[in-house]
Length: 484
Ligand code: DUC
Ligand code: ZN
Ligand code: ZN
Ligand code: ZN
Image (cartoon, rainbow, N blue to C red; front, side, top):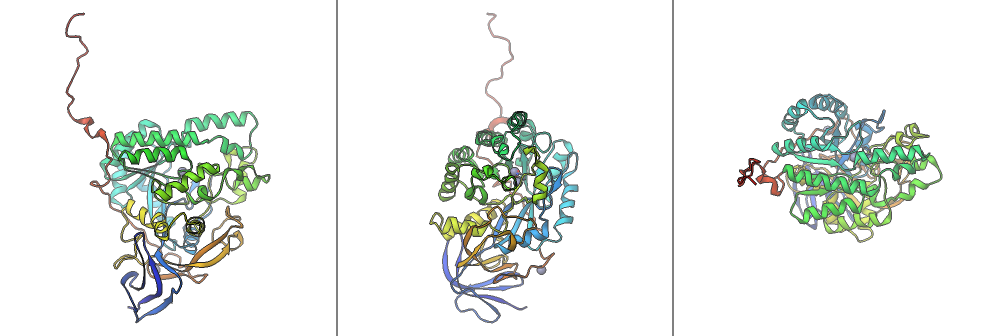
């Protein structure tokens, strides 16, 4: 078996930074130490050797808002690898009435072309006995996290009764509950009002989804999860209102995690007021970009640990697709790209500004989510035995982000023109060099599905609700004891 040795770099994990060489055989790390020899050498002089990024939130080739997201598992994972991300977790989105495992099969059919490893979350997009049954099959198939949309009324949204039932089921199965937290009823009302008043442009999208709809739904989801006895992962936390609810829950001992996106950390709501309709529409996603104060809150959350993982919600649409919403912002397909840019943007604006240490960078881009999703230490680690999903990051290497050089299939990039410093020299997926000093050497179909085990003992809410089913001390009959 031929070995690869990453020479002369500094290994950077979520805990430690130290000089060492890393030997890789059979797709795994087999030795970490000084002066290793006997294999094909990759020179990491001046570089950091880190666990590859894990993007816990992507939508590849997803049917949505009358179309399909433009990056599929091939272009999406090629984009991921070129930016140092070596694993994606994509959302299976069952159709209304569709069984969960039927939908999972559709996703397996699409993901055969992936260039890097991947896992799935299951979305609960409707509620009924068939879904309840399917959730156990999903867990047995290694898909142990379940996402619920509190928005997209009339399409994906689940109501509170459904949310509570589903959360309890997830809890019983030892899984992880996830939410897209926006109050879908309020969004629908505000959307109708804005359109009726003639506010049809992309900025209407932002007005229809103010921070309060996210703060309210985040609070509600946390309380419902607590009552259901299940831990909760809140995707795309974009504002202080939602972050505050998460901080409060964590401080109270609840197992709640928040995920900001690189887009919300670095782009703000002024994008929606750009005079060019295309420019604004290309940035329409839910939740929308916020003002600078909300951005500062998200950075503070990452720095202090109240927010845990940086994702992308990569759901890319071409300009042509975005134009479905000319004359009606509610028809602009929601979503932006970012898979390729998440690590370089976070390194530049996080580590480059001193907000994050390199170790914290590894934690929020890889290790934390590997632990939350029960992927650790197969993924998210530089340890003997771990998969050799690695990024060799050169902190001096710079580029200007441009759609003209990206791997993603779309015709623009929301980070266009940004100079980023800190780029991969090498990216390895299970030991195979996918990015070689800028050259893309990805191999279609190399990626493998990574199933995950449920964790009934760990995935429990620290809630008072545990006692709900216990006998109650007082049982009233409704009849007063004395006749008065
Ligand atoms: N938000 C988006 O912007 N796109 C996909 C789904 C979502 O919740
Ligand atoms: Zn969402
Ligand atoms: Zn999403
Ligand atoms: Zn392979």
